[in-house]
Length: 76
Image 1 (tube, rainbow, N blue to C red):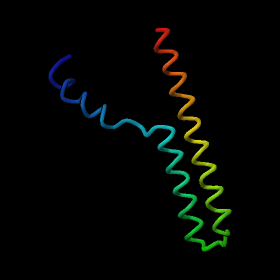
Image 2: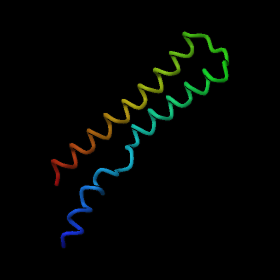
Image 3: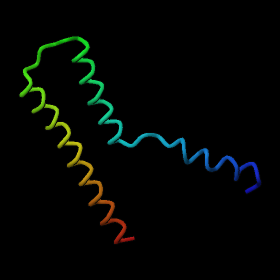
């Protein structure tokens, strides 16, 4: 690796794509803002129920991936 490649390496690390979970949370935020912008009426209990059920789904997926990664790291 020459000097130019060494200088570029940190830049490659800092430009990582967002994780699946970050994308999912960004999607939920976008949906929330679009709904507010359109001033669509959604009863508050229903809105928060839907929002938190989606958030719980993301958390469950994250926990499953962590468990799989942990199991794979023990094998390898």
